[in-house]
Amino acid sequence: MRIAVFSTKPFDRRFLDGANEDHGHELRYLEARLNEDTAVLAQGCEAVCPFVNDDVGAPVVEHLARQGIRLIALRSAGFNHVDLRAAEAQGLTVSRVPAYSPYAVAEHAVGLVLNLNRKLHRAHQRVREGNFALDGLLGFDLHGRTVSVLGTGKIGAVFARIMLGFGCRVLAHDPYPSDELKAVGVEYVDLEAALAQGDVVALHLPLTPGTHHLVDAEAIDRMKDGVMLINTSRGGLVDTRAVIDGLKSGRIGGLGLDVYEEEADLFFEDLSDTVIQDDVFARLLTFPNVLITGHQGFFTRDALENIARTTLENATAFESGRGTLHEVTLADVQGR
Ligand code: NAI
Image (cartoon, rainbow, N blue to C red):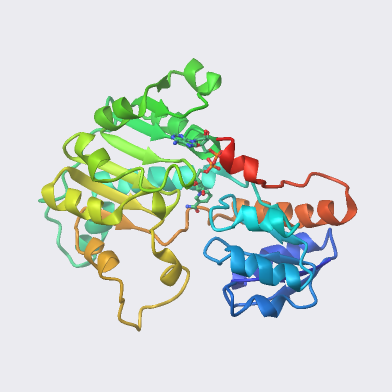
């Protein structure tokens, strides 16, 4: 089928072209982000393939439907950027890549924990400048510390197992506890206990209306003094201004982010020659104990191969009725 691939980067083209050798779809690569102005670029296609910061809200969905688009083939696990109600109303199918590599994101989250704890990013800069002083680089043993994992789906489960391997006590909070994780020593507790007891609190749950700003001023107040907060899931889970207050007061001792509430205007682009207009983001960058990466948790060769393969398999399954179509429906949001 003809598929308009929005927000295309060179790496998307490379992996999608590779996977498409097994499918033979006609891929129209577009650098533009999908939004109300650019939806027209999908004219003549039967499917669009958006990425995480594309706008797939109701007006865009309606525009796409008018153009004859029948499938929104997301090349991501998250689908919070899609108006599923509008898609259902317009008779559009939405597919996603439910599990391309939980290891990629979980390992990145662990990287943020290790880096923040031992200040590797700062140490690297110092050593390059011939500064071998250790002041300011003091960390703590992860062994024996308590790590709270909010959301133990595919990524959270891998993260929890890695932290168990470090000798941490792992607490988890999830409406659907995993027997496998319990069997290896993860303790399920309520949100209150997870927030209150974690030396590290890691977010691995989806962004839904119910989880928006899950980490707000009140939640931060309930956390341990000096807690390390890790978010590789979606920026909207965290109230960034409340987190800045927490960093200023010292309540939050370390912040590792791979996602940011307003990332759509920043991430995935080289803005090094421009002045960043987002003052909240700019403030975050001033803290020595904040480490931010630009939504790269998924960015491993293995994950990109799986994303490309599953995205095109979804399109083939939709078109031919053969194979598995990883469809997202309203029930995925409402039922959980
Ligand atoms: P998943 O669907 O396998 O797991 C999510 C888990 O969160 C489920 O077990 C669910 O029951 C739980 N959950 C839902 N609401 C909850 C709540 N209120 N409190 C506690 N737990 C709750 O999802 P997966 O694949 O593990 O992804 C997790 C997150 O990672 C998603 O937000 C996704 O968008 C994000 N992600 C980030 C990437 C990156 O590059 N940084 C790449 C891929 C995913």
